[in-house]
Length: 633
Image (cartoon, rainbow, N blue to C red):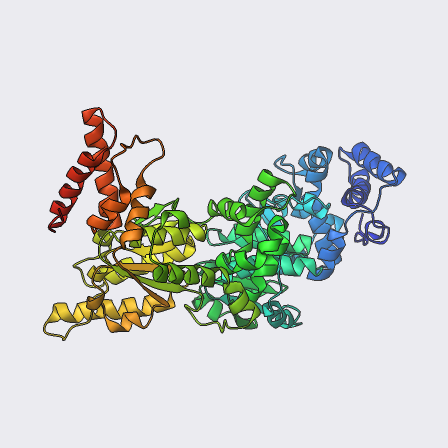
C-alpha cells in the first residue's frame, strides 16, 4: 500500500469510540499485509467487520479534543493510535509481534512509516521523534534498542483507557482531594481573567494559603465547566511529570501544581512548552524566573472571614443555625470541614445538631499538641464550681459573652478590619495563690467548649539566646491551630517589667519581653495569664489586655459556699460541723479550704468516724502552718 492512510472520519464525525478507530487502522494494516504477506489478516479483518456491524453509543471524544488542542497532523494521529492499539486487544499486540524483528508486541517505526505512505524514507519519523508533542510530553515512547526503524512505539501508561473515557490515573500520579464546597470571597474573580487569557500564562501562587487556594481553585473551575485537578509534584521525576501533563491534556483538565520548594531544573522544558495555562503554587525559584512563557505572580490570601459562615452552612448543614458563631471561633479550612461533616453525619445523620455537640465533634479534627511545653486539659468545671465575689464574676461573664458574640460585632457589624490579633482575647488574672485563677481559666475554656492548654514555663524559658522566643512562638502558633485557651500560670516569671540595660543578660531579657509584647498582640486566640504579683508586670503588657480581673480572697459568704461545694454528697459529716462558723473564724483561700477538707476526710477515715469538728480543726491548723500564717483560735 503506497498511499498515505487517510484521516479517520468515522471515529470523529460519527462519534464512535476509540476501539472503532483502532479497528479502522487495523483494516489498513490488513491491506498492507495482504499485499506483502504476513500473519494476522484474519484477525484484523474480523475486528473491522465487527466494528462496522456494531452500533456503539457515542463515547467521550477525548481523542478528537486532544488532536485539536495539540494541533496534531494525520501522521501524528496515526502514530498515537498505533502506539496504543495493544492496550485495546491482545490480538493487535500479536500482529505487531509477528511483524517486529525481535518479536516484541509493539508497532515499529518502520511499520508506522509504511502505513503513513513514507515508503523507504525514515526522515519524517525522525522529525516526529525530535519535534512532536507526542514524544515531548510522553504520550508515546520508543521501546528497545537499535536503529530507529526497529524500535517500538508504546503509548504512555494508562493513556488508552483515558482516551476511551475511563478516569484512570497511573500509580504515583493521583490528584489531591479537591474542595467540596467553594465560597467565592472575591479572590477567584481576580485570577479568572488570567486563567482565561489567550496568552496561556503560568500563574505562580505565593503565600501561606497557596496550597488551600490551589484546591479551592480546582473546585471553582470545575463548577464553571473547566475541569481542574491539583497535584503534588515535589517528588516527581521528569518522566513522571511528563506523564502527568499527558494525562491532563488527554482529559482536557487544567493542571494545578503544588511544589513546596519550587519546580526543579529538569522540569523547565516541560513547563515552558506545555500548550495551555498552568498554575503552580509554592516557593518560587530560578526555574520559574527564567521560563520563556508569560509568568504572572499572584498572592494567595487566606479565605476571607466573611466567607466562613457560608462555608459552615454549606459544608455542615446539621450545624447551620450555629454557622456564624462556629465560623468566628473555628475558621476551619474546607478539607477539615469535609471531615467534620463526615463525623456529624455518622453520629446524627441529617438531624440538626446542637452547638455543644457539634463543637465536641469537631474538636477531634483539630490539630494535636506537638509541643512538649504544652499540657492539654479537658475542662470539667462550670459556673457552679466557681465561687467568686460579684465584680470578678461579672467581668468573667462579660469576657465569655464577648467571645461568643464575635461573629456579630466583628463580622455582621464590620468591626473586623483584617488586623492581626483583632479576634484574639487577652486576659490577666491577678490574685493571691488559691483564689480561683486556674479554676476560672478552666471555666472560660468549658464555656467556649474548648480545651485548656497549660504552658510549662520550665520548658519554654531557655538560657540560650533566641531559644525562648522560638519556644514561645511555637506555643502561640500551636494554641491558635487547635483553637484552645492558652493558660500561663505564674506569668510574672515570664512577663516581667523591662529593666535598664546593665549587661548582656538585661539586653537579651528586654528583647524577649519585646517579642512577647508583639506576639501577644498578634495572637488570634484566647490567652489567660495568671499572676500573684501584678505590680511586677511591665505596664506595656497591661495595655494589651482586654480584661484585667482581680481575684480577691473569698469573703465570709464565699468561704461558706466553698466549704459546701467541696464536700461530696456521699461523704459522712458529723452534726457538730458548722460551715458558717468555720467561714467566719478562718480567713482561708479556696485552695486552702479544698486541701483542709480532704485532709480532714483522711483523719476521720483513720479514726473510723464521720468528718467532724476536731478533724477539720486539725486539718485547718495544718493548712495555716503550711502557708506560714498564724491560725486564728
